Image (cartoon, rainbow, N blue to C red; front, top):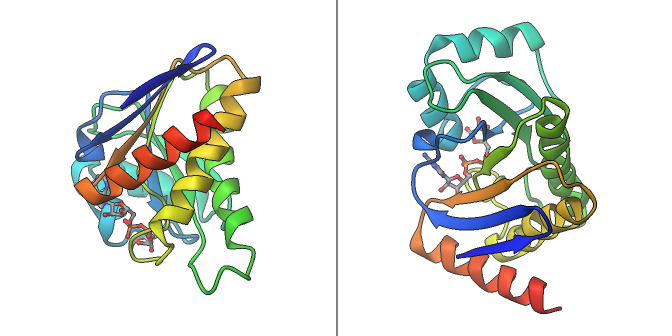
Length: 178
Ligand code: AR6
């Protein structure tokens, strides 16, 4: 599914984010930038040791924020490491922290004059965020951002399963109608 809002195309696809050729891909990192499983493991495996070296130099990133490193051997030039929250019960500021991780990533992309960025579904794997709620935050944050910032030409979400893709598609349809 693809829509255009002002200058920016928003696209939702199923796939493997490590294969994306955009200016930046976003990693669902932890606050130690220490690597791990899931999409984080896949990005470090595909991108090679330069990415971890850059992460070590930076040292860490607070939950709800993001940092940028080289893309190493990836086709993407940069990796933006965004740290989403662990989901407890929704009453620990999870929404705000998740939105912050997306917003900080978008701001970093603009700051570095990037035109295209691809997100995974941050926090909805190991960190346990319910996908429907997470899709509302993720897409809502992106739509709010691109309505007032014209710098990005493409924001894509690469979902890892058909069911996640469907949830994101339904949410996007609802958000653009409302
Ligand atoms: N491409 C796209 N999406 C993927 C890929 C891939 N190659 N691999 C997994 N996903 P997770 P989190 C999806 O657990 O919940 C790590 O250990 C996955 O199916 O990667 O934010 C970090 O180091 C899910 O939909 O991230 C942290 O410690 C989504 O990516 C912690 O996990 C996010 O799942 C972060 O947990």
